[in-house]
Image (cartoon, rainbow over the protein chains, first blue to last red):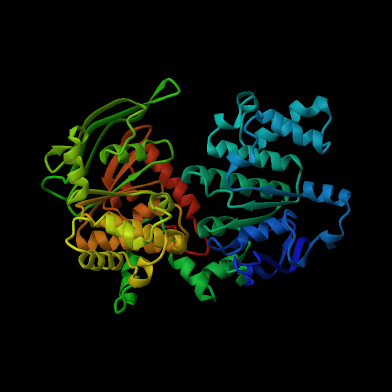
Length: 282
Length: 275
């Protein structure tokens, strides 16, 4: 299989000095290797501060790693000329957590999408309207109803659909989605999740999903990497990592996962209470 | 089922807000009971009115934008909505209502150490020694056992989960009969969320503290609550025992919420989806 995007020994440190001169480096990402293959969904799981969002930004080429190398189709991005970046920016598309802040509040939906089509020469002007209608349809929105809305006239789920439509306009090969569901209501999360699954399948898209939610990861990903304090503590096929976790950290994440079923929640808790009975939890 | 008089009882509560000149019926005729020792959940999506209801029941609504506030919220025989300011203060100060919110950092003073802030909630105690002892006891109740260290810290030195537990400790200082918690774990990581939920569960089950939990997370409801009210468009669309609600929802909206939750929790590897 061919890796679309790969990363080797990525390190990113922030900070430098404290007030009085002592060095105070914090390694947000500390020696991460990864490959994403065509059509594959790779989930990166971790809690806040684990470095997963920093890693996403490095993969997107938004920030440079302190050391290590990111390569797109085998070519290091460090050696990219500006034309290569143009190709890369089309092929690798981000979706962010908060759709409200990733859309221009003063721009209508159709303008937002038309700008992308124009900037990247994806369609001729006379095709814009048809193209926008198709894009909106692909994310489940009716163009007649939504084309002239501003972001504030959309719900959170609709905003996220527009952000996805904008990414899809580029006909990307890889989507890097940083917590794409976590600002949404549960019923909307389920809809957007289904949308991502169907887009991925119909277009052979690669997807890097950054998430803290094991339910989402389990529902959509082929492989999982568990990140803790900048390092990958466990990686492998999703069913293996979540089904029989090897590291204590992964186990603690699984134990903390809530289940929307009172029978299971309470049976599991009784078992845990029994296991923990001698020492109080702190 | 619980019998006897409810501790907190809302009847036909309406909160209509004025937003950009239009009237929004945020809460539109809600009945709700919390019995002593019970953990009650209000579930709904954003915009369902659940937070406004929680704020109305604790009389914490800002009164600038309210077009109509009616109905009654009875606590120990008195109507919270009609209470005189001094009675309301007394209710909050001792054996009454306490509240915990979503974002702990915005409810802590960044310039004061935790001991000062907890101490403020304990001003009724006799002397500094008593306040120190009670503060430590409250922190232990919420699972922060390293009390001497935590009391000397500033809010920015605490993790999110510790901050939320400090706020719960502060809410417990007046020895409330009921704790109202609005999305108490939404800002927290999964493992920390689980710790806070266990803290709340212990307070409910071991100390008999009644609770009203406002959340969008059916997983949290399944974990904690005895009785659940499902809210949609300002109205309660279904109220049921937690097991009955999850096993056999009577309302189409409730069923759709459960279906969405199960879609998200549909687990290939974890093997916990099937009932």
